[in-house]
Amino acid sequence: MTRTLPAAAVAATMGLLLAACGGSGGGDDDIGTISFYSPETADMTEEIAAAFEDQVGGNVTVTSGGTNEIVNRMLAEQDSPRGDVWYGGGGFMPFEFAKENGLLEPFTPDVVGDLELFDGPIQMREDEWHWIGADIFVLGLAYNTELVSADELPQTWEELADPRWNGEIQLPNPAASGTATLFVLSQVMSQGEDAAWDYFDSVVENASAIPDSGAGPTQAVAQGEASLGVAFEFMPYQLQEQQGAPVDFHIPENTPVLVNPIALIADGPNPEGAQQFVEWFLSTEGQQIRADWHYLVANDEVDMRIPLTPADVAGHAMDLDVDWVSENYDSIRNAWADRYGG
Image (cartoon, rainbow, N blue to C red; front, top):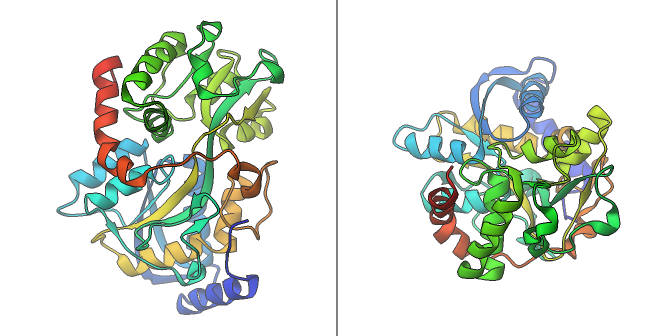
């Protein structure tokens, strides 16, 4: 399980934050406005913003969009940054790209100050604290339980190229979605570039649609428009509870299991407020909100709402070459767009 500070230490840190901000229930306006960028579920990020304002203070404005839209926004604003905090994006891969392009500010939050670099095979933070893992994402398949049985499910990613799935699968568009970018990068790493592009040709041929939204394939599966969809684990579990949808989650062998980070944007307009936000976000109180949205959070002291733990998924984790990701993140996305449109 992920190592976190004891509950007493977390509570003490929260107490210091609340005391500095004048207590909960309205907080301290001196914190100012915090600009929060995130591609995650919009209703969840708005709930996170409101909870911080209520418990700590200040004003949090949320900017939503696809992962690559968020990254492109930060690149365009680099000479005059407008964002303070960035959370989420299909795992740490886009954060590594952002770090290499000077978009992130290192910060070691007190609340997770003893967080090890690795927990088993899972890298929990950037070695100089440019990003910190907040959730654990498992790339897998959402499937419609009325259209495909458990014993029919692909056991490897390579099986998605089988003509048996023609017209039955969906994946998001890597030009817009961090979920899909992770899928593409991981397959190029595991199969080699030539074999991977041949594989993608077959997968695209099998796909009934390639929506821009990372959640789009799971929604299509829930509605019976596809049997399988490339997804992160929280997506089908949300629809199970919210809609009673006939959808579940399957983890193929040798798949990306990685943290979904939070980070400070370099030279943001409110660095002190941003630091307070990150401290709260990584506390038990902050993480419980995301757990309630069916995320697999990196804090083992919260109440999980999904039938998975970090220990359950670690055995599926593939090796991820962080340096290769940084060097190829943009070129692989562009290659996909040139080949298939985007």
